[in-house]
Every structure is written in structure tokens, then in C-alpha cells.
Length: 286
Image (cartoon, rainbow, N blue to C red; front, top):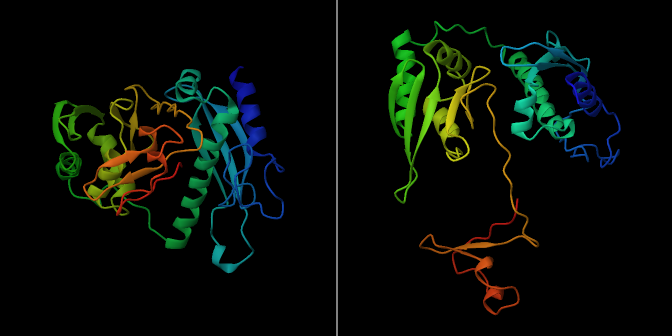
């Protein structure tokens, strides 16, 4: 389908007032469309529009939303309307697993909720507008990046805007992740995060869940650093094919850290009925 038709279907999903799979008496849950409404999507935060806009890295869609809040003095001055812009490049949608608007709708809904939460948080905190002059000088700001990456692995600057981070994942396995960010872009990341998050926490959260086989790049995107399967923008987080295991599986961890899976034993065997070793823990399918 063309971009206009895609946006039309996406908007229809995001604005559907009666999605199936939700009990009207208990609307705080996930409907059949995959959108989680626990935090008030569709009631406290409502999508009002979606329109195609040009972007530096391909087509985008600008999603408008409104906040529905009580008529209470505490909300005076709160910005009750906002927009969020998300990628709509056809190749990016395909690589990300969002060729169908129904697959993309839950992702866009989360972005809308996040933008709405930011408006509320800023109103409650009364935070002043920040300036990049608040952190140290330019060299010290860039050093925050180098030190943060060095806390996760061995880092070296290959050329301006390009760094390599060697990660040791144990067992002799090592990967190199390429970090693509300029000093100016890093300033924007730092401006967004430096009052909210300790630098090393930021890098731990960024590198910790990284899968170097699927995400060999870290790129600058929307005032943040994000993992990606490619150097080009927008970044791509390729979908993971998780094989279905009927009935799930449990994993038992012993005091020595060893793990035993039920897959080691055929169903119905005496061993498969054994309880987890003493001191172990059970992990259920997520």
C-alpha cells in the first residue's frame, strides 16, 4: 500500500474507540490490536490526527494527541496538546517488521504515551528550560562519552564521529560495536539526560541489553543513542523470531550457577518430573 493508505489504516487503529478484546467495565488492559491501555491510552491520552511529513531520512508521520485531565487547579498551565513524529520510510518499516500498520500501531501508541508523560512530568516538576552551557566545557562533555563507553569495554576513536567499542562477553567471546555520533550530537544527548541520569547508568542501560550479532551499531537518533542493525538512519531493531515451545519451559539454577532445562529430558521421563535442584529458581515463559 502507498504511504497515504498506510497512515489512514494506522490512524484508524489508534483512534478506534471500541477495540475488541477489552472489557468496557475494566478498560485498563491490552486489546486485540496489541495496544496496552493500562496507562490511559484512548482515554486520558487520545490520538487526534496523523499526517505525512517529509523527513531528513525518508517519509515520516506526525501524530497529534490531546491530554484529557480533570478541571483542577493543579493542571493549570499544562500543555494539553502535542505531537510526536515517527519514521514511515517503506524500507525501514519492512526491516523493522512493521510492513503492516497493525504491527506498527502498538509502537506508535507507546511513543504517544511517552510524549504525553513528558508533558505531565515537565508540568509537575516546573523544570526550567535547560541549556547546553549547564554541563562542563565541550572537551569535558565529549570526555563524558568516552569515559562512559570505557566503563563498558575498550573504546577508540577511529575518525571524527566514529568510535569502536570492543565488548568482552565472557567465555572468550568478543564483539566490536561501532558508535556513530558527533560531538554536537552528543551534546544533544547529554542535554537531554545529564540532569536525569548518572552517566554510567545511561551507558549500562544502553549496552547491557545489546545483542551485537543483531545490533552492531549504536547511532544518534532523536537526541539519544540507540542500537541498530545498520549505520543508516532511521535505526532498525530487527524483529526476533522466538520459537514457540508448547507448554513453556523451566530452567533451574544450582548454587554453582549451572542451569538445567527441561529440554534436556524427553517429556514423560522420570528426570523431567524432578523438582528444581535445591537453591534453584524457576523461570517461566514471558
